[in-house]
Image (cartoon, rainbow, N blue to C red; front, side, top):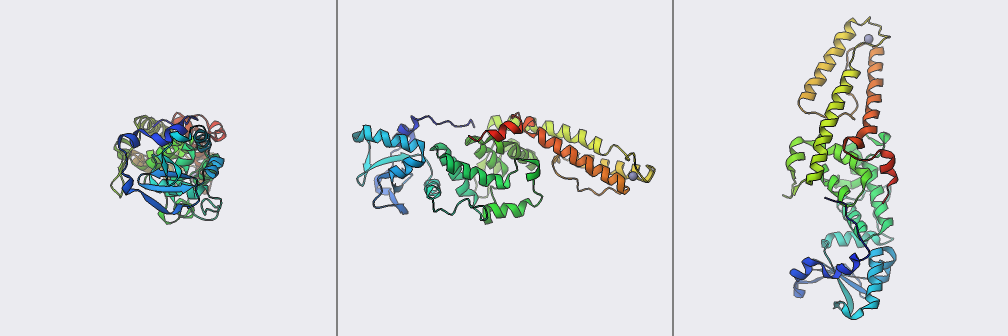
Length: 336
Ligand SMILES: [Zn+2]
């Protein structure tokens, strides 16, 4: 999926989406949204068969795309469809997504408070639509919310990931598969989420990376051809790095070994052998802390932990590169 860009002219296409023209919806099936159809609203949005009536100036103040639409309507008022006395704007978004988006635009919305969860579905919908309709503040808040869970620095990596997912997304716990995160970050052009998203995909399952994942609701989520290639190459690179790092971490007793190297030597060899066995099963976790017990002396154990930490930091630094992305510094600067 290529990142979308929206020119100012996209506003003009809002009311005449090709889909909407080739498959005109039947007005008898249109339904007013129970909460978001305001009797004194000045514009009607039609998403699927759901009608939303809100204030055009309110939308225009927040969204560059709607600001352009607002001036367009002033210039050519007769060119617009109308509904209930208001200009009718057909949008190609899912009704539920529009509901989340309009709710998120409201200054009183409950979304994205730092100490309370906002589930995945509204977060993803708001990120998508605030990107599409160019609402920069709301887009930033959605990205910030995602960054509460998905690390963008080494220190952000949280071992209690599951609890944190509950805190951030509530009971739905986030997307069912990391491919969904990759596709969201790609379509909304949030590059800083990509290294972790790709890393999560390559760790999850090789088969899913190639064929996609069938969700509980039956939908198949897949990587784009480009992202699949990126992940396969990243997988290969990280496997190589992991192998090299393991060799260095388990290279043998340290210089200060109190065991004179005898017991420690075989304990470290044993740990390396077991690590290689896991490696052989395709386990890839070069960022995961070492959990394996090594029955060596305290100094050797310390040495192994120190090397492990150093190597993991190195992997983190090189993570973007493994997926063909610019370095962290550049990714983090890019807030657009
Ligand atoms: Zn030792």
